[in-house]
Image (tube, rainbow, N blue to C red; front, side, top):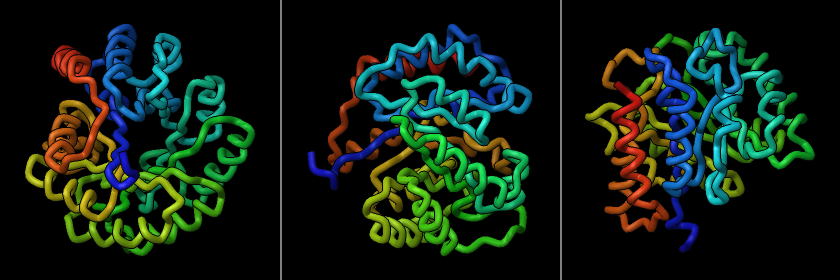
Amino acid sequence: MSNQNRVIITECPRDAMQGWPRLIATEQKIRYLNVLMRVGFDVLDFGSFVSPKAVPQMADTDEVLKGLEKRGGTQLLAIIVNERGAERALAYPQIDLLGFPFSLSETFQQRNAHQTMQQALEQVKHIQAMLEGTQAQMLIYLSMGFGNPYGDPYHEDWVYAWIDRLAALGIRYFALADTVALAHPDLIRRIFQRVLPAFPELHIGAHLHVTPHNWQQNLQAAFESGCRRFDSALGGYGGCPMAADQLTGNLATEQLIEYLKNQSVPLSIHQEWLQKARQMVAEIFV
């Protein structure tokens, strides 16, 4: 399989679950995640090490992780927002990636992590230093990467500038996040067509929050611009609770897989386990 056709899929049950109004039982999460581990996804965004007051649904991430049967082909990703979270995550050598949401909107950085952008940058520097000598890598989510609803300044050039600045710290993994579904195909194309050729040594993906009306055109814009890393969630659950449109959610994994099949992209997805996972989605998100 050539690198041109290789697509990395990150399944995001953590993003789907974290804002769900009903607390999901730890054992149910473990069963679901263990099924997802068998589907053949490249990365599994399984949980987060953040304040249980801020995200009650993720308070059991330690217990969940202890119940996971890690499969060799699927990397584990945990979300952190500070050094304390990084310390907790690094206690588990089976975690491959530490995801840090870094917002291009000062307002959202404060709302999401109670930090200024400068404080978040200092956290990133400290965490990156903590990762030296470990097998774990940091993945930066450039939140509000396609604009924000708060009236904060935004320019698409900032995506390039921040990738350049953060890559200088040794960070190699990035996801450009359309946090509140403001992106449109022209903007997506311009940004990816600029940053992908400029940083060929980096792993730059798309974390798109979409609506039933724009998911395909936005996915297509990213794919045709050369993006080969995509985040998605079965059922399209999750997304940012601050998005104004109630129909906004994660890109649905089912739609992503179907789109990639139509583009003749070879995938290592085990259909039987995928069907089991889809059945569990119907049981969990009720």
